[in-house]
Structures are given as structure tokens and as C-alpha cells.
Length: 237
Image (tube, rainbow, N blue to C red; front, side, top):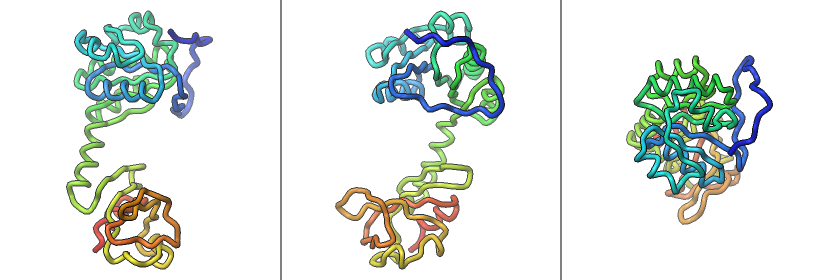
């Protein structure tokens, strides 16, 4: 099922995630709403996915969707070894509510030398533990989605994506005060501290924004900048 690695290399220094390459094998452990969605989308993106879950009903549900699906106790090093997970370059731990199983599974993957481990966390404390036992990248899907929804519900913002602790991309309808003038003339970066990345004029598709672009009424723009400045721009009149 998997290509053999020549030994297990020790981890050193700063941990860096290597993005998966097309066709590579990825193990997704825990096929709940998060893990199942990740696994199904990876298959759609042409990755080979081994899905593992302790629940027989979930295994049966995903049997026809994923490359391989098996039922097993992923907190066991031996089970993971028998399934060949040690030979996978990437693994995603989608277990969330059962924190003990999440931590033990992540630790087992680390012990087996899986070089790129992603793990779902439900709290910051959970995330810190996952990092200490071997997770290279911890995601907080509920927390991140909560922030995103709050920005959209708050008005003025159509979509919001945080790139860094204080740097965001915001999708919003162009403020009325900016309509009919070129972006170069408006000097948006100098005046508002954000960069207009792309624009969708009414009835058209998104395209790159240039200094000569003249926003029309109802146009949608995507701007990037420090979090508060991007949000402030979205609430301009």
C-alpha cells in the first residue's frame, strides 16, 4: 500500500510542514465531520487516502468514497504499524472530542516517525499538548470558523480570512465613497493601510486590481492588510 522509507529520521530544530504532492498517500484518522470532510476532499484532489476510525458505521459510510478505509484503534502503535501508517509521509488526526485518543494517536504517529502530522484541537490547552507530543501543525476548526462567522455577521464583510495573527484578507462591497475613481488616484494603501488584491465588477468575474482599475457601484473587492485596518476599510461609507 505504501512505499518503504529507509529508516526514521530524528526531528531537529524548527518543524516545517512539507506540502503533500499530488498522488501521495495521506492517512486521515478519525472520520467525524472534520476528518471525513478532509478525507473526501483529499480524494477529490487526487490523493490516495487511508481513512481509519474506531466506529464501524463511519468506516462503512466512507468505504466507497476513500481509497482505503479500515476500522481500528489508532491509539495503538502496533495497529498503526500493521496498517502501514509509518510509511505515509502525511497524517491528519481528526479526532476532537475524545482528547485522550487524539493525544495518544498523535504521539503514536510521532513515535512511528510520520514526518508531517496535522492534528485537530478543540481548545488551546489541547493544542499545546498535541504540539508537545509530536503534531507539526495544529488546527482549530471550530474556533477559526467562529471568528470568520463573527466578522461576516458583524456586517460590511462578505468573507474574512486570517493569514497571520494580525494580517487578514477581507472580501467586501466597495465603499460608495471610492466608486468612480481609479485605485491609483484613491491611494488606498497610503490612506487606509490596505492593498486591493482583486476586484469583481458587477456582472463580471474576479480579476486582478491595478492602479487604473475604477470600481463601479456594487463591485466586490478583496483587500489585504493588518486585521483592524482591513476591517475598518470594509466599514467605510
